[in-house]
Image 1 (cartoon, rainbow, N blue to C red):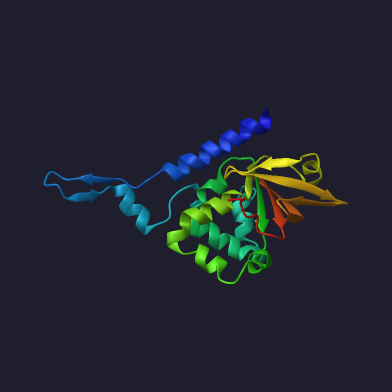
Image 2: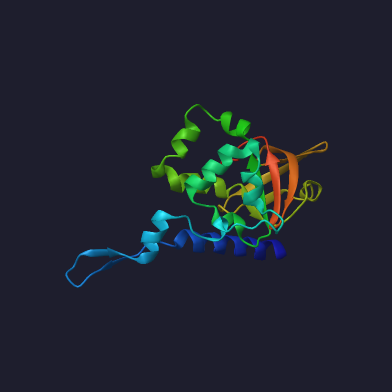
Length: 192
């Protein structure tokens, strides 16, 4: 029941963030006026992800940003505009593909996904790398499936001491202030 509650919380949080839209109001003469929130958002990054904090334990986003093996993932998160979703209180489990995992995709895939017109598709793929909870690799061995924030479920497989989530092998696990980052060797692509 706790897992379902956490999944609903994370899903609701992601929906709130994705539902936020820029407002355009109409002036008395019928011309469009951008709201001040829209104007300031276009000139500077806003939200909890952009607040400097050198005291707290790093969150899942800060861990990814600080990793030289996750520069492609960070670029993708930024292109999809998901920074603020990854700094919420959580707990969140992020399955973080390495740069090598992104490099293993067919040529041109990453470049294509990073284009502004593919932002929604990229966000959907990235949300399938996040799930509510803070479970160690060993604890994940008890699961058969895991629901992801994108709405998909992924299979969990145990092969000896290795744990695979959606076909991606967990290489390392790093505790975070708002959950845990599981470094994986493959990009977890949604079924559809």
